[in-house]
Length: 336
Ligand code: PSU
Ligand code: MN
Picture 1 (cartoon, rainbow, N blue to C red):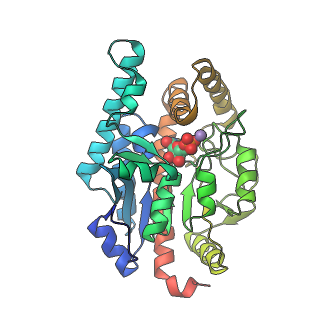
Picture 2: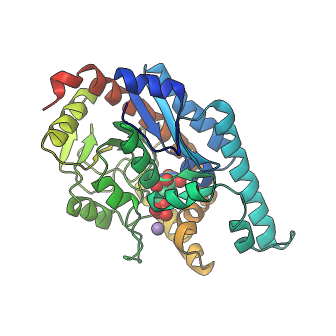
């Protein structure tokens, strides 16, 4: 394994797999700290790890704990991250409702798990903070650790009506050579603008058994992708060929949510419009926009969107494990 900074702690099972060229799948942790309610956050994180294991790959959930970059969490660490974020959210809600003292600003300065993009890793390490890594943060760490595959729900992108609010996920995808399996970008975003940005950044977007860009909760939104792959092996071949050219970007594999849990696009659009209006009324900005919108969408859909979100996360973990298996098994053969 390549030498890593002193701030990194690689879980022994992950280190062994990387050492031996066995398949490893990185998993993000903002979905645990900021993306989902408790206890679903912990449960789905464990289930994603279970799916990866079942397909004979090693899961590496990436997070920062007390200023250490963890590549692979054990059960206790995962439980702690999920619980502490739920407690922090509860405290913040009580402060907002006025049933508890303190201000959200003073809580921010406290020990609660943070949302860590790539730019936040240095400060988090130096200041001994804990937090969930976003897609950008996870990519930065996974690339340094030499992990080749990463599963998530939906990437960040260009926000609607706020073309200056572009997720750091996009530029980080441009410089992290991993296969990223997702269900497109979060549906609350401007999807056409996000696809354009991916093109500008040189990130190939490969539809998995689809010619369309999925809209996270929905299997399609009418936007075509430029490439499609039918099997995990084809995905692996595409990635090896891409990196073999010396290109350093991610290969974005978009996997539609399973048909039995996918939600109709038009219905979700109505709900998203309402959520966007509420966010505007509440004056949400910056890092809090995404978690707020996801929560609102879940509330307005009566929990249906949450059910879909959980199912697609498990589904993406499965595909990622299969791709990691292909990349590892045919490492030499598929190397361009
Ligand atoms: N998609 C989800 N839930 C999430 C996220 C994405 O369904 O919680 C997280 C990811 O970690 C992603 C981040 O990297 O939101 C993007 O946030 P922002 O738009 O602030 O960059
Ligand atoms: Mn943003």
